[in-house]
Amino acid sequence: MERQDAVAALLGAPDVREALGCALKKLPDLERLIARVHSFSVEQASNSATHYSDVSKARLIEFLRALTGMAALDTVVGMLQQEIHRLSEISPRLAALLTRGSDGFPHIDTELEVFRYKQGMLAVAR
Image (cartoon, rainbow, N blue to C red; front, side):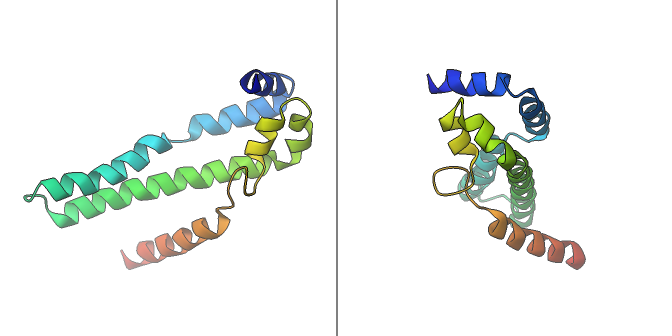
């Protein structure tokens, strides 16, 4: 029933649905990217002929792509904060998931800022 309520809430808010749909289409497959970052570790451990610099570079690229996707998702959730009250009338669960905090979307601004700073340092070092 919660899923149907969430769909009804999005159908009742075409502007939210449109913004969310456009933003989500631009996101990479975060689950696949994170799995790929992990698989580099597993593959490297089982293949003694792998060059460490190649694996590290590939893992770093995938990790940065995952971070970029998380930042984009964080931006979308931030844009939707003003619509939470309207969504909560139809789908409290959807509103709770999109609300920043302990039970909803986590606050990741600080963590992302650390990586943005370090990524900037990497760009300068190149």
